[in-house]
Length: 191
Length: 60
Image 1: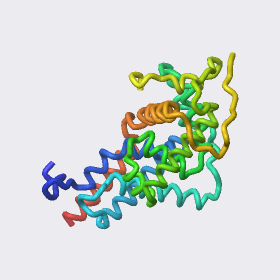
Image 2 (image 1 turned 120 degrees about the horizontal axis):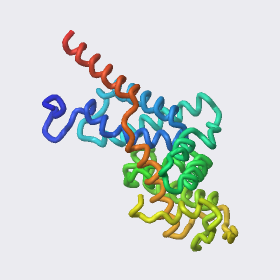
Image 3 (image 1 turned 120 degrees about the vertical axis):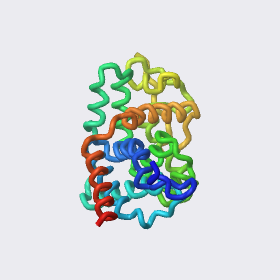
């Protein structure tokens, strides 16, 4: 471990990067909607980060720096392909649905599919703030925009999901016939 | 079977706080699964290769 600590309180980003890979994979899955494409995106991110570590300023937010690289790689890939990933029932959703003990798996599949229908900017804001626990400020740093923009995008994303999933403003869901019900009735203890 | 019927304004971004919280909780649940998995071998191999390359560069 002696090589990890380069200066007091500052770790080597080449070692610290490992601690961020699970969240990077989760973010990549949320963006791509596909397990394989997500892992390719993370690998690309690691390669780019490794080649740019000399530009990283020790002591600054490595997580936001890495997420920015991944985000930019994703958007660059999207521009190159110039088409939407149409895996609306993609392998990530299928993987979730295949877990035998996964409560509400169909509901989660619906959530994944609904998420894919949001614009990229709303999806990424919602993933960072809603799913991965980024502060609004850290998400804004990652996406290169103002905190207020992240708040607005995340709110629009939540409203979009509510609309797609049929959740009404100010109403309790009263839909026992749909797996969506289990999406919105999962107790925090079960999360 | 009873369904709620949509009367939402498509441009209205406001939703009930409880719905917003539940959406966030389920998003966390969804991606906690992904974050809890072991790293794929390809990614581990890539990190090993990059570290070896760095080590070789320092030695060379």
